[in-house]
Image 1 (tube, rainbow, N blue to C red):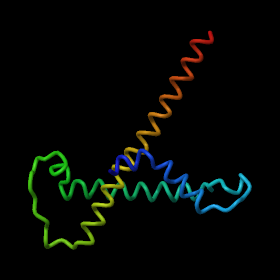
Image 2: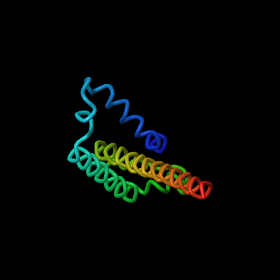
Image 3: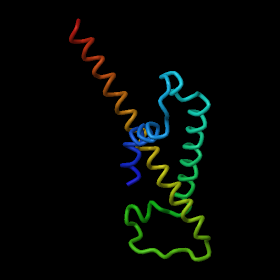
Image 4: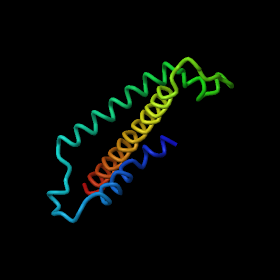
Length: 120
C-alpha cells in the first residue's frame, strides 16, 4: 500500500496544493526553495527512521514470511510501534516515489535520444 502511495505521491501533493491554494498569480503559487528543502529533510528523516525501524523490528522476516507467526513485544510502548510502522511505510513510499521519478526521467531521456537518432 505504501509503494502504491509513493508511486502517486506527486498526484497527491498536486491535489492537496490545488485545494489549499487560493487564486494567485503563477509566480506566487510556486513553492519556495526553503519549503522544498524542509519537505525533503522531513522525508529523509522519516525514511531514516523507517530504515532503523525496519531493521530493529526485523520487519523483513514478516514481509518475506521467514517468520510465519509473531508475537507483539508487550514491553515496548504501543505508540513507538505505530511511529515505527508509519516510518517504515514512509520509507517504502519514498523509495517508490523516487523510483517512479527516476523511471520518468529515464523514459524522457530515451525519447530524446530516439528523436536525435531519428532526426539525423
